[in-house]
Image (cartoon, rainbow, N blue to C red; front, side, top):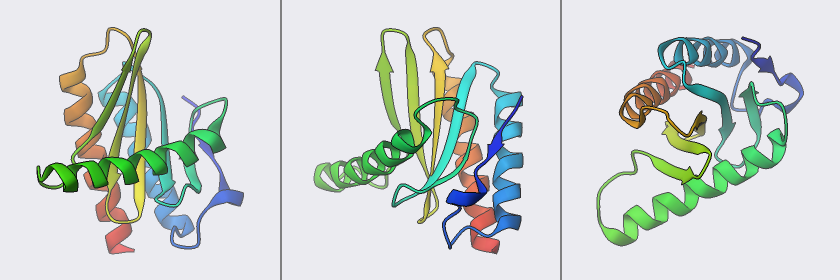
Amino acid sequence: MDLRHVHHDVHHDVHHDIHDGIHEELVVLRERAPEITGALTCTIDGMLVTTDLTADTEQTAALTSALLSLSRKMTDLARIGLLKETLISGTQGHTACYAAGPTLVLAVRTGQRADLGLLRIEGLRAASRIAALVERG
């Protein structure tokens, strides 16, 4: 698997050692949930950190951060607690977004027949581990 490091887009809050740790977490995520077809991390303001997506990476990062913001606002408005996950299901697959601490977002894509329970477990696990990496700084 080839996860690209996007060093020129690394946000000032994401240092290179943390960036490498995030890369490692995405590798582990893909090993634990092989149904994942792509993964991306970005800052909450849409700056790409790491991805293995091959197309539309900048636009995906921007939309991922916007989706996180809207999802957080919806959970606040609905008074349903803290946001855990946003899942978008289409006819050919799924995209799930997870807050990875206060500054990063994890987005993962799967095919149509993915085990969404496994996706949720592994996505939340990876987001939590990424958040811990950033917190340790």
